[in-house]
Figure (cartoon, rainbow, N blue to C red):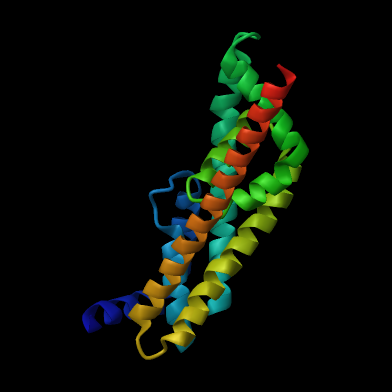
Length: 210
């Protein structure tokens, strides 16, 4: 265990760690298999010792997330928009894309900001926003808020985990990552329950109308 901790400390002691965090969080935005969130939390836990610098960890994570989201948006806009334009006007997929366009027009900022905390969900949202050609200026504004708040969340989660387990940083890392996973699962459970309640309400209304 000590050898693993020593290896982690050697890695984060290098100034290249900020570039690594930037790269991992950027990739994580459109390739969710990459553990960007875990990398930020780990670096933040070890930052309680003063190296790396927590502010720069958060900054690198925010800029990386912002860059990755824009790559995902560009992918959606380049490939998705072209495919959507070719869909038949009366097809179910065209109806679905029209619904997605209306949804992001009405609540695009809220959807984009909240989806950043859902692994995989943020990729789907940014791809969709590109495909339906959500205004780039609005995307930049709301995504900037989302990326910064997410980086602060991960950084502070790791920082307080490191303070709580100052003598055992590995436990601090595990606690930070575990709490992050728990919060994500809780958000997903709330979202699922709300969706289920809406479906039941719609079914009851349809039964009454019929």
